[in-house]
Structures are given as structure tokens and as C-alpha cells.
Figure 1 (tube, rainbow, N blue to C red):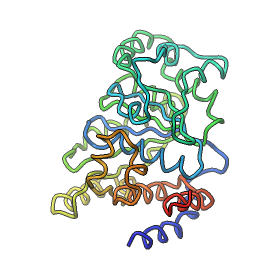
Figure 2 (tube, rainbow, N blue to C red):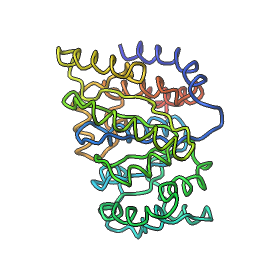
Figure 3 (tube, rainbow, N blue to C red):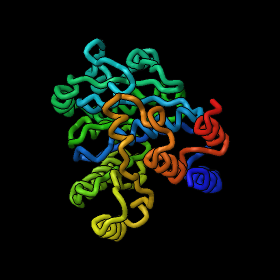
Length: 299
């Protein structure tokens, strides 16, 4: 079963990559949901890990004050001397000024801008500075200085709407939203879509809403089928046909602070995330071959 799934993914992967990504362009992707408990951080972490194992250089930006992503990659935010106000509220002129915020992790091809509880107070500082012209674009401008050093920059956002999230949306090329079976909230998703459209119009940007996908799916229950049909009718092709199955390995991985593919690379959720990466067109065949070597234990 596992090999059949992986072979199926490989057949589709080049077509999706060519149609959904411009060649030789790095991308900034935000994972956003205004409610917690939907595997937002798990999704950002696992997709980052899949891309990194495949050979892509990945920078993770953790904007969630809960710091789950920061802790997952072995960083202790209490020891960081990070001036977040400098990063979000001031436009930098030099690449080195932004690189000072970035740390390498123990995992190959993954670097991180770590989170801190100070992000809670940063929200109010951004609000105070919002009277300044285009302050929402400062994070975008600062990440642009180092964007060409990475293939992907993945932003894990806080589970509530704030000025910090607005800055992240402005900085992103694409937005992805995980949802849970108990997160039946059209209003929040519609609000997010409106925000993206408003920002695109206000600043003449082309931020793409890449789609919605379900997480923590425990079988094709009646509730699952009802929600699937409802979201499909409401959001059309922006409701992605890939769902992440619920499995014990995800909970154990998070509790152990070990990324999912390191904990159990053959679990059902890992296979689903790999298929999601393909569906979103994030990987080409060359990098998929590297991922396959890892999955087979050859690297």
C-alpha cells in the first residue's frame, strides 16, 4: 500500500510542479487559521521537513507565541536576544540586519526565526506604528532581502487574528489553511479571504490563497462527508482533496518534540502530507527522488 501511494505521487509530481510554480523562484507560504487545535503548526513543521529532506533550503518563521514550532526544532526562546520590533516595525536596508535573526537548526536545510512570548506585546507595538505609511509591508520588505537564500520560507502564524497576522499575509506569496472536523467556521475563512483580497487591492500585490485542507481525519465518517461536501460547495477548487488522517504518531511526535518524519516516516499522516506537497506543486521530480531515498532508508 505504502509503495503504491508513493509511486502514484511520483507520476503526478512533475505536472503539478510545472503548472503551479515558476522556475527558480523562492516562495513565502503562510499557514493561517484563526482557531487553534487544527494542526496548523504540525502542518507547517511537517511540510517544511518534507521540503528540507528533499533538498530544498527552508527558513521557518515562527510567529506563534505558543512557540511550538520553535520548541520542535530545539530552540529555547528564553535565551534569544531577538528585537522583534526591529524586524517588524522598521524597514531594514542590509541583508545582514535580517540574517542576525536567523538560526540554523540541527536538521539539514532548515533554519528558523524563533518565536517568543514577546510576540504578544509586539501586536500592540505594530498597532501603534500602524499610523506610519505601509508599516504592514515592513516584514515583507525585510524578508525580501534574504529571500533568494532559501527555496521556501514557511510562516507559522498565531491562532488568532492580529496585526502580526496581517504583516505575515503581506509578506507571503501564498496562504494555506488547515481545518479540523470540529472547526466548522465559514465566517473565519471568508474573513481571511476578504483580508487577502483587501491587502492585494491596497498594495497591488498578488498573494494567492492556495487552499484549505482537513486535518485529524479519523475515517470517512458521516460528519467528515458532510463537512467535505459543505466546504467543497462553498470554496470550490480552493478546498483541497487531500485530507490528513489522524494517527497516534502525530501526537507522539509533538509530545516528544521530534518532527513527524523523524518520528515515523511511514505513518499515514506523513504519507498524506507528502501527497499534499505534491498537490500544491511544491516539489519537482529531482527533489522527490531525494525524498524517496530518505523514505527507503538510503540517506
